[in-house]
Image (cartoon, rainbow, N blue to C red; front, top):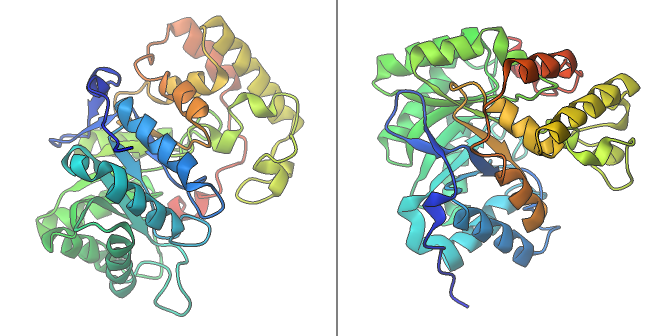
Length: 341
């Protein structure tokens, strides 16, 4: 059946201004890092994307190497765009990134001009798009001059292949340098995408101050700490979970101390009438400098539960104080190296 978007979709989601730009983003955005590769049924992927848009999610976040295999999330999303969302292209913010390993050899990784622009061209082809709304430098690369990397983003925007430039996992200092370089080229930095959660609060150490001062938006990824801030780990590491597979999250990172903090946070969530995941998302949105939070979803039901956190980022002083006692670093920021230089 031909997909027709819900008429009331824009009444379902609050939107926030992205820094000092003209762009509004939904408080909760959908990321396709997990669950959109070739190992997942396309009809399940289609159902998640459709339902997200019906509930007001306009921002869909990808990267060149999302899958597995690399590139497959963009191919699958491109199919959904072609078959379902094409009439709504101008209602969508679609982003992609480059900066991590993508293809063999010296030009398929890191942040050279050659890699970034070649990767963007490949991403557009995979998704069947004329342009993406945001093109991100996926990580800071200490071996490539930042001027070269920002110059590639500037070219992407000036050539029309991207409407806006973004960066991900840059430190406060490097973010300020990126802002200044792009400004000197006549292009603004729209948005920064850092990891941020109740168990990974590094952006509070200066990055948020830079973003607020410079009018750059912030979209937090991994706000559920790769699933740790959901109910699935309350009783340990279940079989089939991400931690049990020792991929981007390993079982030895789920320590007894971390689980004790997670259980305490779960009690706070229950007192607020929220699930733990909803609490984590609402908490990440408590700061107005955070424009949006990125969630993944393996099912429509999980998507709906997480989207219900939108519009509930008000906390009492007592709630915030209680959360602070257990919202402590858990050593799960696997992207720390990019923002440490």
